Length: 152
Image 1 (cartoon, helix red, strand yellow):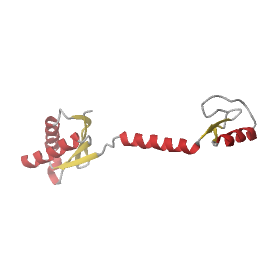
Image 2 (cartoon, rainbow, N blue to C red):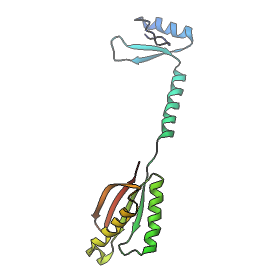
Image 3 (cartoon, rainbow, N blue to C red):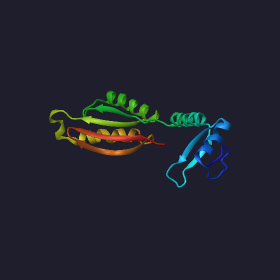
Image 4 (cartoon, rainbow, N blue to C red):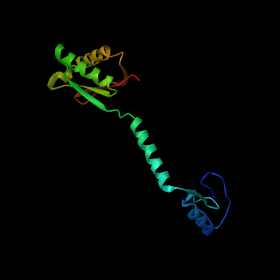
């Protein structure tokens, strides 16, 4: 049995341990049931649960949730539209999100995947100081996909 201060009291019968914990107005909690003899601790269990939930809440507050934002373009996208999409990519990276850039091929455009690869390379060139390449450009069916992550 362990005291509320963390000192070992020793081995004693369950009734005796229950009596001591009730005298102090605390709870008797079984800490290690599989050991021989089982280890119990005198503590305020309600306070312990409260502190544990606060610790979890504090850890959740400090963790960052990374989302994957997607930008879709076509292989023959004009300059103004490209710049518009580029601003979105830069904003997503600055917010700390990953970005999935998809080139959508329609009809006979798939016969020239090099146009899509050129566009993805252009995106890479424009944002090379903000990002880390997570997945290199690759063709998935009629789409060419690349994933970039922000620099930490």
